[in-house]
Length: 323
Image 1 (cartoon, rainbow, N blue to C red):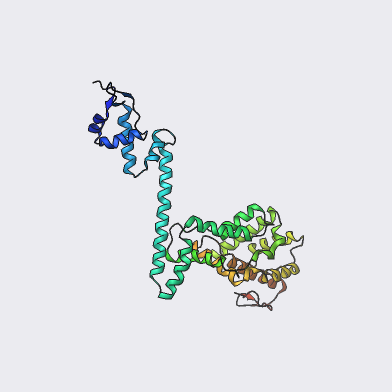
Image 2 (cartoon, rainbow, N blue to C red):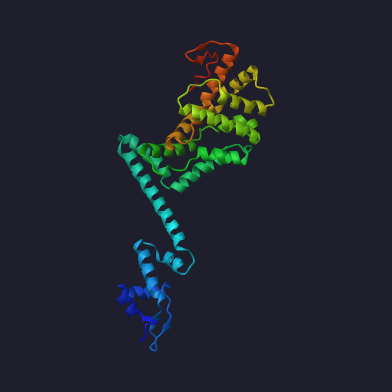
């Protein structure tokens, strides 16, 4: 007997892997036969030893035989396998964390509330499908006049992915989003702004600037008022209507935005839930809308020398305080 090749028994003795298992590996193509003995028995070459060690290490990680076969045959690299397995583990951990948050949410509440939560939380246990439900809803609902890039940005804000590390409150908020969009009376709010939606990149660049400045002001706890955020907001709308930024135009714009769906309580509820589900990572657009509307009114009041009460301009229409 030479040691250019080894029998399956010799490999079993040298590696500690049972003959039956090695035969299964061989039949599966994981352990190619180099030659046959005169009696027809399988013989394996030197590469068999390293192949068996690799198989054992991957099996210790519960890697499926089919996946191991792809690696040893060169169909995929070990690095690709590790990346794919890591992604699968992370998805499983997210599912487990979501299940834990769901159960904790159901555990810490009265009986009737538990039944209500069970009904809505059951909608979002299949996380990829739950995310797709929100995404599909908003792509259907948002105006077709909205430019594609802007549409994608808005849908990403309105349809956040499920929280990766949820607590009961974020899991429940995410489930409540699905309850809202499934409600027939939920407002189709985008029709108020078709004219602006047809605008080009310059309009949205200024709107984004206004939103960023507003978010920064809200994060710092600043009250609404005249300033760069309001100026950017007014400039965008003035350009869209080919108007000049005058006190009269600001008054007209204030009237328009005060009547807009930004003050719809159902939409306010939705954005509040988005903020809760994302732990504040997505700007609450109704809070921003209210802040800008109040700031716009204060800028008009300042320009006209109107009285300001407690930091807020006296608003005869009463719209700036609308919840």
